[in-house]
Structure formats: structure tokens, C-alpha cells
Length: 312
Image (cartoon, rainbow, N blue to C red; front, side, top):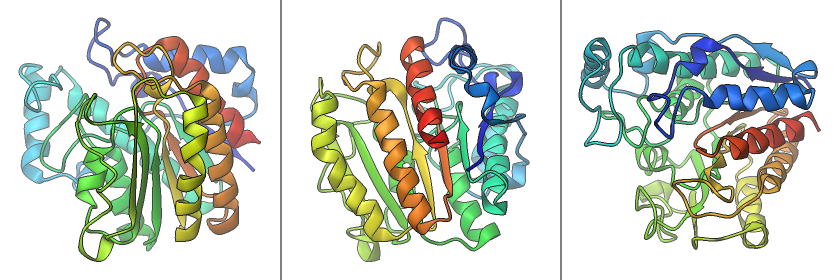
């Protein structure tokens, strides 16, 4: 089955400076390892694509998009309460994240490339009306809205193994029974954003369609494998039409801003099993996003473990 990777300087523009954990060098650390392993010869390489404002507006409010555009010119201030600084060209850089995801989605839904990995993507903290946690636009939210409005796909499974809870996705779709949400993350008592507790299972008609699995700091692969079968069965039982994976590498041991101790093998196992579910219910459709990860070696190894698993 064909596998795609998006890579290029325009996608690498998304970052907050060389001294910031989310620096623009992250994509190149990943790609250097991709080439070292020879995976670049086995995949279809997609060039970054910029999203149109109307596409971003499928999830975000007009007022917030205007604010990003304005602060993108000056590069001053914050786009939230102090976690996500504006920078010159922020709107354009974030638009390439969203647009690359949407281009990947077109390739997936057409059957051209059923499995795709976008390394700088999965910005799962942004709200509809605000940035949050280094995330300017929530590309995951745009993908979900696009699947519904442009492709008629209702049953979407979103799986997140980033150390941080995917709160921007969770709360935006907390009352949506067709968004299957499954998230393994560091317990919010110890880590930003302080959410994602086990009792949060959705609201109203969506009650029971959301699965949050908070993990203790220091949780390793053994702890991961104890909880993984529960998540896998949860997703399989939903019989999704497509699977979105946020494969944040900050859940791997020795990340500078989290306390998890997974190895890249957890990311490989996650991807292999989700590929099986995708083959069973989704005609193989799986879009994986890099998410967080601030130890460059970890993200290089973790994200390439995802790519290798997608290649089978």
C-alpha cells in the first residue's frame, strides 16, 4: 500500500525560533533520519501546500483568523494567554501545516496514497477562537470538519499518543457522537493542559464515544502495553471510516518538557495496529501527524518508526 510523507522548507517554517522547544529545525531532524534509514526511497514525497482562509475557517472563527493575520505582520505579542508567541509569517507558516494535511487527505480519499505522514502537524491544542500550547491553527479540527463537509465522512477516529492531552480536539467535539476520540497521555495533574481525565467520556449523545487514558509520569512501554488493548478495542468497536493519528514524540523518554518514558516501539506498535483496523474498516485510510516532541533524536526515531510501520 502506497505511503506518503510531506516534506519541504515551507512546512519547516512553522516554529518559534531556534531557542524554542518547537523550533523550525524539527522537520530536518526527522528527515535526516528518514534518509539515513532509506525510507525516502520507499515513500511518495509530497510538497507542502498552503491552505486557503476559507478552509481554515471550517474550524476557526473569522475573528481569530483576522487576529493571526494581524499579529503575523508585526510578529509581536501572544496568540493566547502566554504560551504561543506570534512571529512574523505565523499565518503563512500555520497555513502550510493545515494545507499539507488537507492535500494529504485528498490523496487518501482518492485512494492514491491511503497512508500518509505529515511531520509538522497535529497541532491539537488550538481552540476555535484562540491559539494554545504552541498551536496556532488546529489542523486536526480542520480535517474533521473537512471530512464531514467535503467528503461526507461522518465516523472519524482520532487517536493521540502525544504526552499532552489533545484538549483542543476533545472539547471542540465533546458532544459529537461521530468523533471517536482515544487519547493516551501524561496525567493532567502533572502536565499541561491539565485535562483529559478518565471520567471525561463525552457529553450528551456523545457520552461513551471518548476515551481518555491518563498515565503516571515515568510510564514506560510496559505501562503502554497494559492500556493499549483497551484503546485498540475501543477504536475497532467504533468501525470508523478513517483514522487520524497524532503521534507526538514527547511521550518518549528524555523529552525536555514532559515526564513519559515510552520508546519509539510504542509509536511503531500504535501505527501497526491502527493500520490493521484501517485495513479492516477504512479501506486502509490512515493520516498520521507528528505532533509534539522536543528531543530531536526522539522525534527522528519515533516518527520514522511510524513511517516504517505504515510501510508494513
